[in-house]
Image 1 (cartoon, one colour):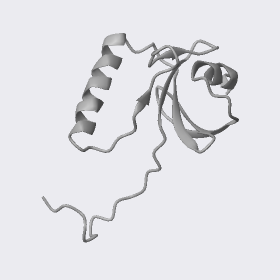
Image 2 (cartoon, rainbow, N blue to C red; image 1 turned 180 degrees about the horizontal axis):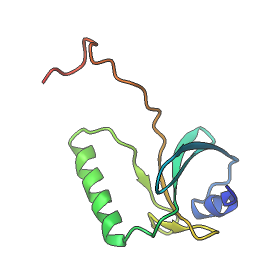
Image 3 (tube, rainbow, N blue to C red; image 1 turned 90 degrees about the vertical axis):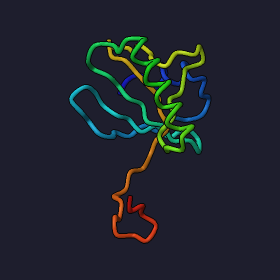
Image 4 (cartoon, rainbow, N blue to C red; image 1 turned 45 degrees about the horizontal axis):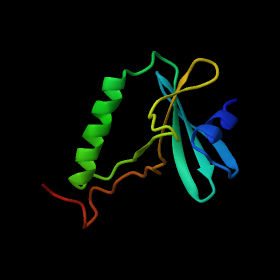
Length: 114
């Protein structure tokens, strides 16, 4: 990953950024960014840029889901309010909260049954 300086500038981070590789999928790479005490998921998209309409639809959907009580990682805009950034090398970047996923124990007492 050769765009740490680009990301630091875009999000106005003056702290050190520690980067580690997350999952790799068909359309891109997830990077875990530790910035001070905050943790983020930086999605590097190798495919064609998502349309502005698609990003707006995702933001609206996730906002409604969060308002309904669904816990999900929030998207973060850069300092100029953009939710999609071009990166050196021609890829695209999206920033989200990092979520540590763990398997759910479906037999646990607090697991909803219906």
